[in-house]
Image 1: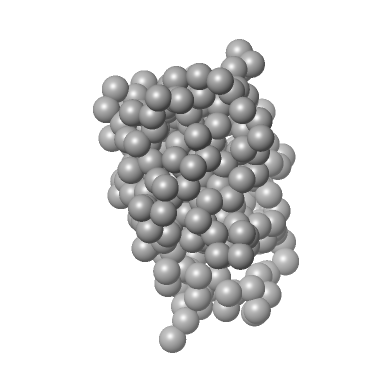
Image 2: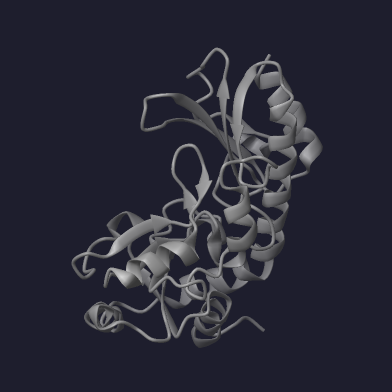
Amino acid sequence: MDQTLEEILKGFSKRLGAARTWIVPGGTEHLSEGLPQGAVLGETLGHVPIACLDVKAEAAKAQTEGKLLVVDNTIASSYGCPAVRLGASLAVESLDAVLGWLGSGLIAVSVAKDMPQGLQDLAASFDERPEVSGRMLDELARALRSFDERRRAASDNAQVAASYLVCHPAVKEVRYPGLKGDPTQAIAARTLQRGFGPCVDFRLIKPRCDVEGRILCAPGNTWVPGGIASRLSVVTDEEGAIWTRLVCGHGKPEPLIEALEQTLK
């Protein structure tokens, strides 16, 4: 029997260490809307190149300054990072990867048990938003049954791919929090759980932009977040350096490495 909405929300809250969770229409790009002035925004896994946020340290720092830490937990997910338990006042997560549906328009919003005064008005606004439709609820309940397995496989594939890329002669630099020696590896080890996420960033000795949007190991050459296929994109860091981002799917690792080898020839 599929979960009810209440059971789904309780599941998110339990994982994150939150008092309450809402699933509402919207996007994480609107994260700053409605937040109290001075809120500190961060991504548990994000940035270019990919890095892990020290949620516990940032939350403690924000508290000493009388501020709130609000995090986008989309890449790490509730499966991979209990952001609220670590000190975030509020965590949001796009549900695209859970549903396997790009542009689902749904986000999960979770708040701390000791909800700060500054978030109470925002929390009240979530109660006024439209409820999730029955059809969407059914889709979400079905998708959640396989999400942990899919996300674990994607993280495992990213670990394998990162280790492969480190040794590739065409690659100049690799960033992945699960790699020994990565700048945020120690932070990730105490912040993330069940792997280090599905994203690997790497710099080529000769940067290439022709890999943008390239889909790897995809039946029918299609890609969706949280799906079987992997995808490459071109991203730029704050200094203008070009990186290639690999978002790993949950397919077998051997075809992924073979596809990377062919792509980097």
